[in-house]
Length: 330
Image (cartoon, rainbow, N blue to C red; front, side, top):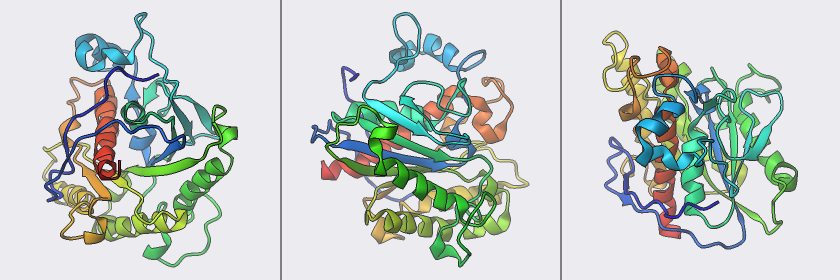
């Protein structure tokens, strides 16, 4: 399925990234190769955007904002199923869940994560089919679980809880899936694939720990560099959506700690600070996507109040930022 129009919306890479660059996405002609994107993080990449009930679930948004979200449902009101975007979801699951992109690839069949908005946007951008590999787990920190080898010396991780275990798991999943694409994506043509980009939305477990906050920026720099090294893709485009839960009005008692982490996440897109990341790392400011408890189906601050629109916009904005990074190559 291809949408009748491609998105051409400008996107400023990050409010705090000090990078005065706006990207306009253009359709990318087919070259026959499957386009692979990796999405990783903790529970908010797993996804708790609620589909049904009130208020502000997908069920209510498609009715209250039909111009923005009406294209996501059929004439009968059922969620659209993409036939050009496939997903393999290994988030908090005993075994991978795979299939054409639609709703239900979040924390449960009743939720979405950022993969939903991301997948619709990149699916519209590419004429070739798209494969999303979603490798995310709730309650894991960059300081410990996702810690990459350049940040610390540690024994080879063997189980959940070992330092660096989930860093290793992301790599294992990507290599396993791309090593046997047909097994995970039955419609694969066999004409080859390209790992196009990596999306990261994580940080709650770090932002509640001052030592993790202090080390976050350097740990994330190492994470980006190590992922690229271990996948053998020197300039693999990275999009980092900061952990903006709470929005712009963070309570004073932990405001400094939380905001330091959010700024650290976006700092990697600062070309003056990190010239090696110029044009290949983008940041997404997510605080504008915060919705109030009153206009959301839950009071779970740490899960964006389970607001469906929030998760959709995070994913869509990550895709737009990714398009900005890739536009110069296409």
